[in-house]
Length: 417
Image 1 (cartoon, rainbow, N blue to C red):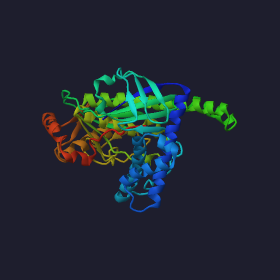
Image 2 (image 1 turned 180 degrees about the vertical axis):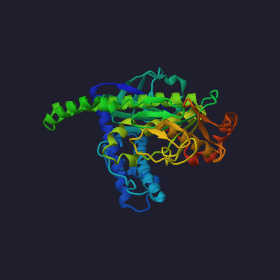
Image 3 (image 1 turned 30 degrees about the vertical axis):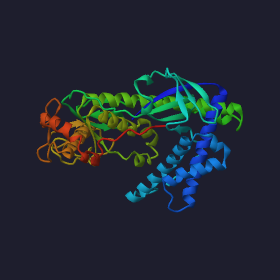
Image 4 (image 1 turned 120 degrees about the horizontal axis):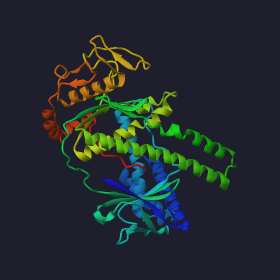
């Protein structure tokens, strides 16, 4: 499944109709949630049937296409199902009980309710909301795919306009030549990551660089009268700047993840619990700005696309253990150099990256706990004793086996709204 996004060009009345459709979708989603809360034993099929009752009861709900109403019910059920899964897993803390939406920004259509033109440059929405025909602005070419391959059409409202997303059912896998390389990545705040070869990528810190401008825009918002047009304009300018930061962060993560996956056959990284890490109020802003989770998602996506292996390993003691002899060398966060009695002197992050790679190869069964080891020569270069020919032969057959999913190797990329 791939997602192509275009910007919509239309008139003011058409944009108001899109807003009306989004509000109706939010209303149906909230009504479905209330119906589930008030009735025991309701399943997703009951919610789909309930949307038909809502269409008969409310005229504005009847104006929305039936598949869009069903998509709203499915969105409601996905939150309910996630809550049930978290309860079954017995996660600590809150389980994510579904809440009512207050500011929904998208409405989704299935196979009906919309029609593409022959040149695939415009799209018309045929329900009773009166949105009409929009011009599609973008660089993607929809002529490569059949209409039947388009599974969903989603309208999204953002600070800088309205967008149309096409969810296309297509095989994203591509065959590339193996590189014969493996890599371990240790992400951090000083550097975005340090790999097992000692290469460092600087942390761009997009939010920090825009913080001065964001504060100025926030002050302008606070000075405006609530409910006035000037306040709405100031809020829009602030939202546009936040949107720019998020796009910069995503662009950096996508390009870097693709480069890493294309250059290596096995990519190892830490299975970090970012949700718990941001509870540290001193580092929360910097951790969110680094976007480690986004980088990991795109690594897993490109690994699936290009037939590579991406594996997350437990982060325990990757910084404390010596990559040369395996001994534990305790050190605080302020100590940036790893010094061991065996003579191993390394940058702290590089030592962790080597440990991450060794852990990943042990999980995949390429090396054992006793056979796989590393050495540091006089120039500081790390040598990993590993039969790469065996790794590559096993890698192409192993990625098809189901037990890779149990260690979190490959997952489909979630659709972001």
